[in-house]
Length: 118
Image 1: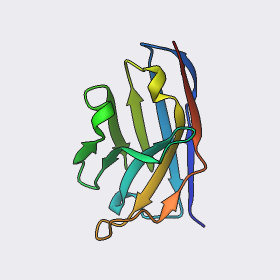
Image 2 (image 1 turned 135 degrees about the horizontal axis):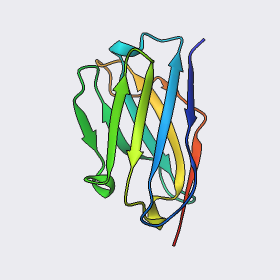
Image 3 (image 1 turned 135 degrees about the vertical axis):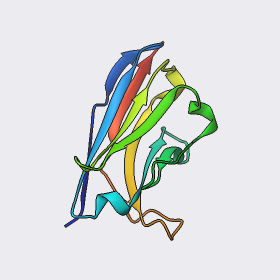
């Protein structure tokens, strides 16, 4: 059974930082592309960041230079370090996993709420 379990969300003031974690089980983690998505109320889900098995990364434009995605294959965990948070970063953040050869994500976590106050 595949499980992706996010943690680390919460309430933070604008300009602050949070670190999200996503612990994976039931998959060969080291072979997967891991992604972080977010969805704010009334908005479409959007890609925040992704990291390949080899460590290559890409970021959504709104978070470039503020967020950093990383992975620890020994711990089957992917992280999202979020700095200089803004109220517009408020959303539910989801962890996702996919095979490298496909474009769509196969597995999703339940999400963790991030709220940034002004």
